Image 1 (cartoon, one colour):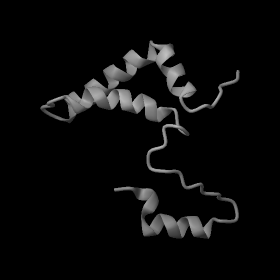
Image 2 (image 1 turned 60 degrees about the horizontal axis):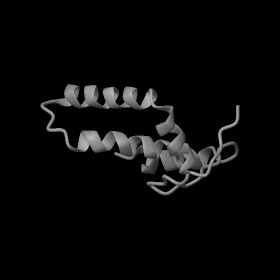
Image 3 (image 1 turned 90 degrees about the vertical axis):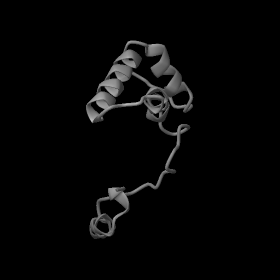
Length: 88
């Protein structure tokens, strides 16, 4: 369920419009969101997995994220793909 689209969430947002600004983004926006590139890499491995249970899927996702964590070039590539910049 996409909670951000429920009637209750829309009512809550409308009641808090005095301090809350909502920006609607496209459902899949790799050019705006570098994490989309990371999840795309994870999904490639999970998509080919014939998992016996949720624990196996969880283990696979965690393993793939850890592999990516140790490859800063991949993370940098996902950020560069957005055209955004990271400044320290």
